[in-house]
Image (cartoon, rainbow, N blue to C red; front, side, top):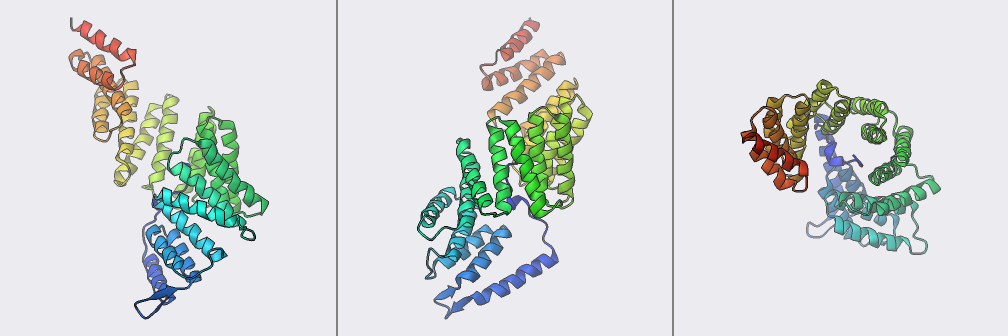
Amino acid sequence: MNEDDPSSCKRKPTILGRLYWFLFILWALPGLKGNGQEKEISLDRALQNANFCYHKTLFKDALHWCELAEATRTDRSSASFMNIEYVKASSLIELKQYRKADSLISELFLLLKKPGQGNPEILSNLHYLKGMILIRTFDPNTERMISESQACIDIKEKHKLLDTFLIKAYNNISYGISLIGDNKRALKYARKTIELTIELEGPESPRLGRYYTNLAINYSDLGQAQEAMKMYDLAENTILRTYDRQYPYLAGIYMNKAIAFKDKGDFDRALEYYRNAERIYLANPKLPYNFLGNTYRLMASLYLGKNDYTKTIYYVRKSLLFTSDPGNLGQLYLLMGISYRNSDQALKAIPFFEKAIEYHKKLGEHYFRLGFDYYSLG
């Protein structure tokens, strides 16, 4: 929830959209010229094509146009060439080629340090990309990510460069600060992210759905459940203005709402939102399978709280089909053991407590439960 993932925001192609793409190809072809053996393309045309492909989430095509541009005899310090290299670095990140992207960004930093080559917009965006690489690679150095994002903000605000990257940099800092537990400070950056988005993109921006969610999480971490729920509602309504009810990001909102209702003791409302999340995960089979496993695990835990052991066992078995994480497996086996023991089926409970102990050897309570069941069997 810390960033925008263009590949997750694709809308269904329309006839108009296909026609637009066809016309773009017809427009782009004249940019290639030559005798069939040696083709060249103007740098400006390559930049236009690369940007178009990148914003259409066609990252491999964007990379191709960037490489075509690099083949031209162009001054590496020119603004157009810098823009091409920036699009290339961005595409490499989206293609998960992080080392190549990081190396390219470092080269561009060196070029920009040369006298007369200062380009505040490119420089600030490169700092943003550095931060994004740290996020995407789960780098434990959160302070470094925050520092790169802050450098982006400082340059943009100094030169009055109000754009999308400024919004994203504030969002990334909010995310980073929340990771280190400073939720009050994170709240400040989350609010600033939303203010800038409304100012630059308008109150209908679909990006706001993600940012309202982040703000809701900050409120939740601060124990302000009522404010958190208001933000979740805003996030849901904002997303539904642009996308349908199967949009994957909605599932995360529904999961968070379910947890909030469970914490309040409203198990029925919690189940309602878990089922909404389940519906979305089933409708999007390309999403990681563990998302569905986590949903079923949490539903099983909720049914255990309702003392409905039959349904607890049912959802544990469903979760096991989609779960590989050792910690979660231990929890699932524990839920099974507790359900069978509370149903006066100690003989069935014992093997599940033993399995739970395999994954959580240091938790003495599992041994206690296991010993109790052995004792009850005489």
